[in-house]
Image 1 (cartoon, helix red, strand yellow):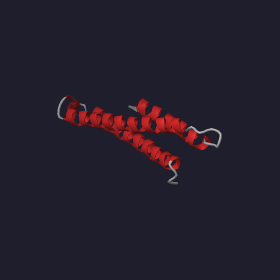
Image 2: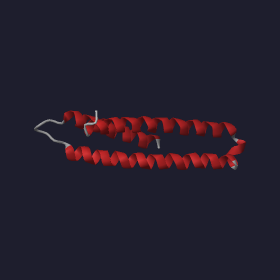
Image 3: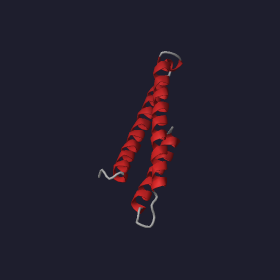
Image 4: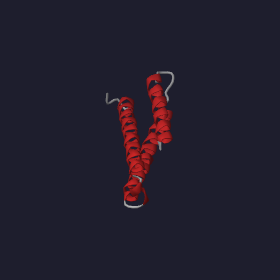
Length: 104
């Protein structure tokens, strides 16, 4: 999941570059639209993966990981960190989307 968030962030950087690069002679609109679509899809998939992982940790509390409380706490912290990274990525996406479509 962490690698997927990193790859999505890299696509956001590329999107930012394309938005700033737009000139009269070079119109990367198709590339921008493609990246916006890909990023939107990836963010949706990442949210699903994090939800599934979070539910797994919650369910495992009642099972085998219950006797390994430090492991369970570590997993929760990891999921929280990944959620924060995804939230930051989503925020960057929204800002780029607003710039791209002239809302800023």
